[in-house]
Length: 305
Image (tube, rainbow, N blue to C red; front, side, top):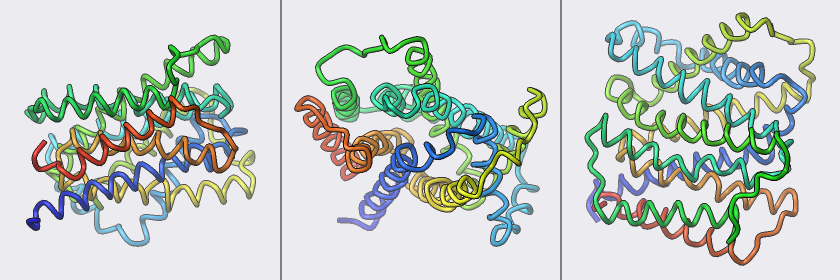
C-alpha cells in the first residue's frame, strides 16, 4: 500500500467516525434540548463551540482577514447551507416527530449522496466512474432498507410526520451541498480555519435570524442540564466531529466523503437499539449490512473509484 492510499483510508475512516458521532448526537444528546426553541438550539450549538475555540484558534482571524472574495463566498455558503439551513432542518425534523420516528428523519443521509454527487460533478468536475455509481447506488438502497424495510415510506403518522420527512429531504440537500462547498473552501483554508470560520459565520447568521424573527435569546429557559448537553455536543459531536470531518475531506474526494457519511444513519440505528431498545427487522439488518459493505468498499478503494 502506498502512503497516498494509506492516507486516503485514514481520511475516509475519520469521516466515518465523525458521521458516527453525529448519529450518537441525534439519538442521545440533541433530544435533551427538546424544550428549547429550534432556532435558538441551532444558535447555541454553534455559538458555544465558537466561544470555546477562542482559547486556541484566535490566530485564525488573520487567515480569515486574508481570505479572497471568492473564499468568503464559499465560507458564507458553507455556513448558510450546511451550518444554518442543514442543522435547522434536521433539528426541526427531529423535534416534529419528538424523536420517536427516526426511520423517517434518518432519510437525511440516504439521499445526501445524490445531491453531493450532482453538485460535485458540476462545481468540482469530479466525474463519477461506473464503479463508484454502482456502490453509491447500493449504499443508498441499503440505507432505504435500513430505514423502511421492504415497505414504502410510511408518512401516515399525521401532518408532523410528513413535515418532518420534507425537512429531512431539505437537510439532505443542504448537507450534500455543504460537502462539496466545504471541499472548495478547503482550497483556501486548512481544516482548523474552516471549522472556526464555519461556526463563527453560522453563529452570526443564526443570531441575525433570531433577532429578525422576534424570537430573541431566551437564555433564562436554558437549564444547567441543557448547558451541560450543549457543551458536550460542542466539544465532541459538534465541533470535534467537524474537525475530524474537514481533516478527512482535505484528503479525499467530495463524492467519496459523502458515502462515508452514510455511517451517520447506520450508527443512529445502532444507538437507537442500544439506548431505546428499538429492534431491527430482517430487511433492516440486510440493508445495514449492504450499506456497511458499500461504505467499506468506497472508503478502502477510494483511490480507484
